[in-house]
Image (cartoon, rainbow, N blue to C red; front, side, top):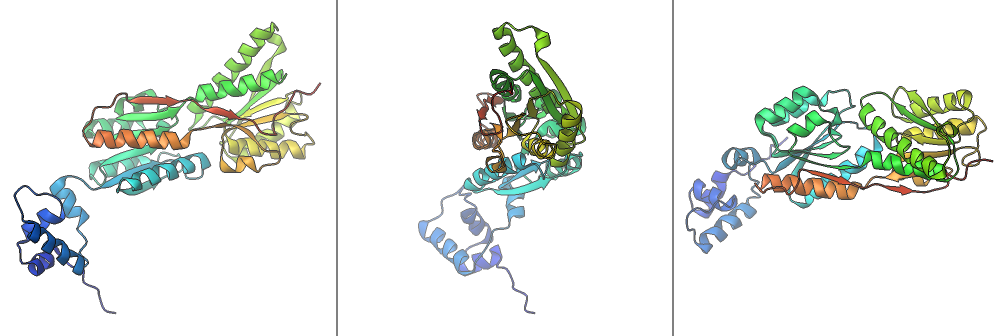
Length: 354
């Protein structure tokens, strides 16, 4: 097998009849001294003829930039995070930067990878999805290294906020509030919140709080007494389809009076729908179900799933803007941006049964 030799900067310089340092200044746009237009054209023509590719590592050592952004994405199986990651990737690529993606399962494994990216200066900056998984150790590492890290998605915890350059999130409590009001205004009086108490427990608690607040506001406006409304919590082992299916079985068996269900995310909601169907509970005639995230599959479930839409495109756009503004040395108008969610009403919710 013949080994293909890659052209070097020295090869380009020899063909153009200049020194390697002059060729480097032209090809890397570091023109600190006058160079004639003819010489620059000769160097660029030689580089094109030799199919010369600049060495990114060498350029990083000289210019202290890698033209690479790191994307840390903690839960690979979460479709909501996957959709947000795709939005981020498109915007980073549009700026001519490479993207290094680090994923995990939410167990904390990415901690080491984040630390390595920061310590070895492999990237110019980091975009993090779901920084709620950041450990205190990683937060300390980010602060001590002065790394540029911007979070996108769920609001970061307080200790992570101190370490981050900026973050863009959506209002999880506001999303829960939309669900609570929607179901209560449909006449439901017995509710269930379905979610796991795992790594994402903080997000679940915030959504549940908003859910209860929305219900309470409708109750107060109606003049009903507090004991006319009730909310039960059904906990699973994870925030996925299987957990939702198991919780749906428990719901049908142990809480037959519940008619309004809010699942912490769309995967859990679909699992609940499945189990309620097998238990002979019709949706939305007997029970209404709402998810969170507006994943792509929610429009094709049977029935179509009512859910809270997360403005992923806007989150990705603003997070990317903040990251590149920080890389350019600009002053951020605000470190924190929180966007409002909206409720997408489909066929899985309807009036409470008489």
